[in-house]
Length: 330
Ligand code: A3P
Image 1: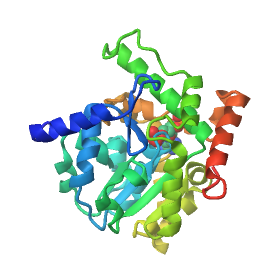
Image 2 (image 1 turned 45 degrees about the vertical axis):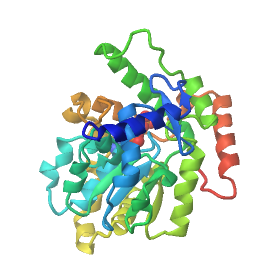
Image 3 (image 1 turned 135 degrees about the horizontal axis):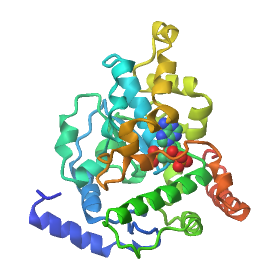
């Protein structure tokens, strides 16, 4: 963003100051843009604005779209390992020394730090990810032939994961002195309430899920809709679906050699979470989140250990009401 002309910068800053502000999701403030609560960091928002008019898509682009904490890190690893499988050996794989966020870049984060040229420089097919809802994607993507992989997750597990992530990130910032020790951490009750009111990062969640769901029905060859729980339960079938969708299906020979299973093992929570880079590294994100924050439990149903029955009912009730008849079952 630093090289943006001063006039444009001023325009963007003026726009930001007009956007509704939400400060309940501590320590991240949110701004509402086109009906969506985006993280309110100015560099981030300026990046999102710039993407709208300047992103150049390629028909071969593959975009992983998620709400945060839906399995982005995992799916990044899976799509990267699948797409590049002829280039690397499993014994000496980039995913053994790089966090998945350094293998598949976030569209909005690279723009936020003024490095869209990194995206330009990527060879085709480019693998990118976004948390933007379909309606906030630039026209250049929506009008193009690029493929979108959407992953959603049980909102109860997602909210627990988001709350834990925000708290551990918060703790690490306090430890390094980057955050005032007095800044309140997000409570689980607040996180649940804000998700239910539609006031959480990239929310309302139901709109996010519904928009991609509808597109997956309208243009199934361009939008693949996956669920975290299904990928976990039927990893092989879903890894094959992913490969086919990305235009690089596994050959019978590869299947016989166990390549699908090797990819699944390489990308598994057990494997990735124990690597040195993912335990102690911290270069993955613009927001300088320690890599370890992206790996917590990686389980389905951990919400039972955290949410009260009322919280669970409220979340299910809201999602059910918003998605019933027109969306997927979560
Ligand atoms: P939990 O907090 O429930 O453990 P995101 O990558 O979108 O930020 O989502 C993070 C969630 O995915 C966390 O969930 C994290 O533990 C889980 N996760 C990370 N890597 C994973 C993997 N390889 N397999 C399954 N889940 C994974």
